[in-house]
Length: 173
Image 1 (cartoon, helix red, strand yellow):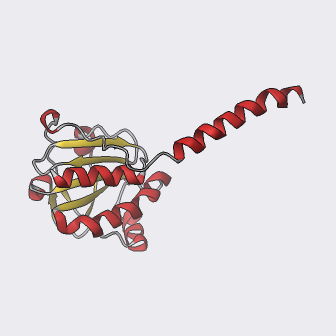
Image 2 (cartoon, one colour):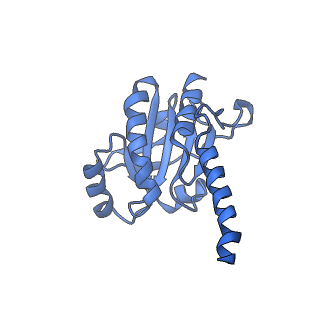
Image 3 (cartoon, rainbow, N blue to C red):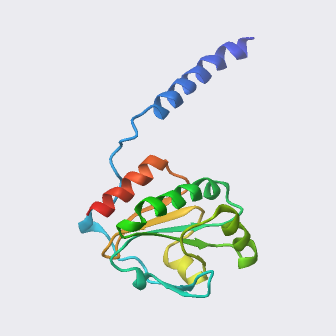
């Protein structure tokens, strides 16, 4: 009973803070890097799920969202429906999502692509691209501007509305 009377106020305070955080307006400012401070995105050349070469240089002039993910990653599975929607909504505005799976092979990835109806190109990562983009965890998303520079990088799941605000901001540049 004494322990409960000590712990309960802390739990209540934590609940209030979490509720307050979740009720913050969704119109937070985008966290993209200023255009003048952006570094060029590392070039890559991979083969997509249809056997077609997929190169960053082939997407020049588009805003690109690289999504490094894997089929066993729960936050990745949460985020993928957002990416499908972003591709559908912004694809006609020079925006392209590119999925890069760090799974070991297509036998794991292809059934997932079909099941989730992914509407953007997908490739398997290799050591070079993982090293070039410093991939240490999934999901890692990299937002690249129309000039091929890294505008934002996120490791882990981020707020969907924040994510979309960043995409809109970079498209509008």
